Image 1 (tube, protein in one colour):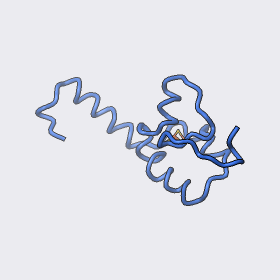
Image 2 (image 1 turned 180 degrees about the vertical axis):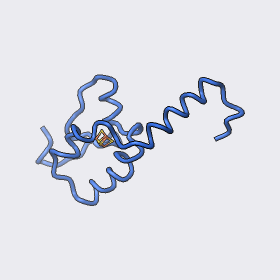
Image 3 (image 1 turned 135 degrees about the vertical axis):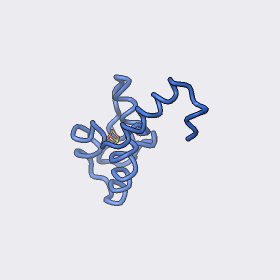
Length: 89
Ligand code: SF4
């Protein structure tokens, strides 16, 4: 990241993103994917390690929530749908 080439607005946006990424996802307690679904342990661990703990701003579920749109229960953070009879409606 070359700060000297960025505008003030870009620097503020970058800082906000960096600070947000230092914290776990604020939706973690309420997220259906973290509580209500029977995911394969390796998939859950990967999601938690990559998205929930530090990259939640890149999570498709988090993004929809921030936009005030409904979040499909079987939506993965990648934006793809998790297909399993247990959670598909
Ligand atoms: S899956 Fe996405 S919305 Fe759910 S807790 Fe993890 S980062 Fe947050």
